[in-house]
Image (cartoon, rainbow, N blue to C red; front, side, top):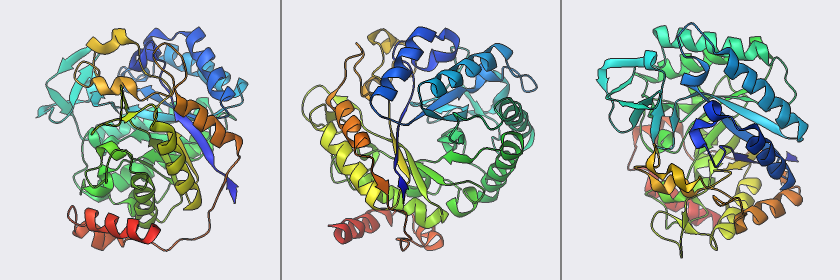
Length: 385
């Protein structure tokens, strides 16, 4: 057994997705110290694509220097980091360099924001062709710069990248994953994974984890009880372990659950949120089950509630619930869930990594989507109760 990796996803509360442009070193360093003080071991953070690659053939030197400083401070505080490329999709918005857009492809489910302005277009083919070549340049440049960097736990190829655009077929996603993983391994000699999410295994979004995750060190998954229509309620602690076990069954890999949590209600648990009082027991229940059922770790979403002043800017102008996922409030004070995560970290849990029988067969499961999810989940809960 290995120690269970407990971490948190990171944006600063004052700037959120504007972190790299605003780049308040004092706030960031204070946050990193506080995260380490809670006993959390890893932070997952995000390289806003348009900041780091303003043109297809150009990486931004100033942003890379900011990344130098950030990773140095991560290491100085005794933390490890999971940098996430091609962000890309974040909190209900697609943040994209203007040069990635396809003017024949309308933005549909998620808004496109480029340089602070909303565009009516979606991204081009993210998985092949010119955009893949630009991504290869990006990961080579970053990988070489941080070759064997001691603070980096692993690279993450993208945050819920099927929300940018679904591949035309599963083979495209698999080839994209293999190409970028090979580039990163060769350039950096560090491990690679990628941020898949619940809809990748509860809908047919033309990815198959068996091929997508094949080159990765382990699979990663994101999931939320309040976003899962098969959940028994907002406090359902079996949703996240179920998504982890479906992921492991399909990918044939160990699983790191790199996003779990829920937005905070002002009072008791609601349809789309949990109260501050309910959140600690939810966190404890999920973490105990993930640890016992073979996950290698889990990262809470996210570090902080964002400043009230951000309510009028994307993504919060249309999704105010995104302001309230933090373990600290927007004034910096800790919520009860922060103490629960610190308590769990202090117990130094060991992940139970012994082989587990698959709970689904990938081919049959995907052929039966989406109707198969609810009965599969009901059977999972029955067996685990």
